[in-house]
Amino acid sequence: MKLQRLVLVAIVMSFMFVNLVFCGPATPPQTKKKALFVWGGWDGHEPKECVDIFAPWLEAQGFEVEVSDSLDTYLDIEKLKSLDVIVQSVTQGKITGEQARALLEAVRSGVGLAGWHGGLADSFHSNMEYQFMVGGQWVAHPGGVIDYEVNITDHEDPITAGLTDFKVHSEQYYLHIDPLNEVLATTTFSAEYAPWIEDVVMPVVWKKMYGKGRVFYSSLGHVAEDFKVHEARKIMERGILWAAGVKISK
Ligand SMILES: [Zn+2]
Image (cartoon, rainbow, N blue to C red; front, side, top):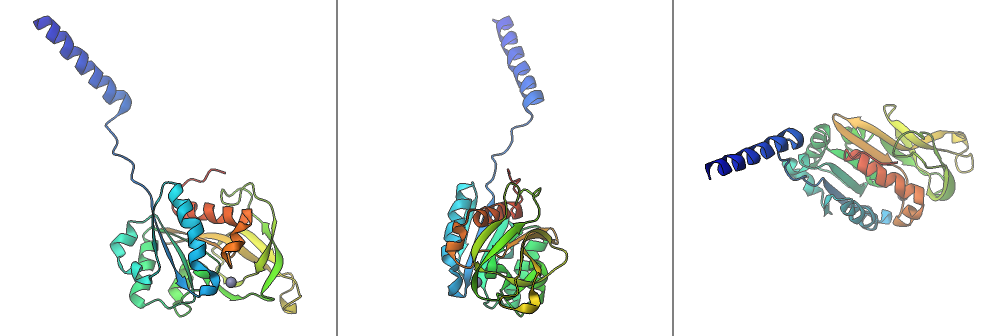
């Protein structure tokens, strides 16, 4: 009996040893990445309809997703800092000093920020530090909704890899741009609506850092319909993932 018990103990111990050496200590269950979508501002940009495209999609990628239509969501700084990415679609609008401070601090600390069109680059005109974070400010869309081409300029970056130049029927955004931006796609203006900007090459898609936070922007997405263009949607999806710190498969 004693021998049998000794053998049993030896077997159990050797199993535990092998388990520890080859498998390491038990890993805690993986926590889901967290995203916050904030929408509001000018209705003409269909902020809710656009968020309704990307929020369920991101949830399907395994994210825990919260959607808010109030900038007061930014006031809970501890919650903001626990997020992986904030996706904002708030055209124009007003942000209070307290809301802006929390948003800026969260992104500086490493939370990603992503957005499109006016929801990120035509927001909170009076807040300069916000614009410093985004890396661009919309100033015009000559001709309104027109036909134009988007040119992929970086074919190596995972956000634009595998995509080719494409046409859209939408607003062609003219922006004041931060030279820090890593530009992934551009568009070239014609002389048709503003002769003095002929041949100006304007960034459409960029990524940049703000402190430790990854900031991603695409000027495409005037209305929800614009995301029916495969490339426009793909770029936005990949940009959100990049901002959240996810390795993107090309
Ligand atoms: Zn627009």
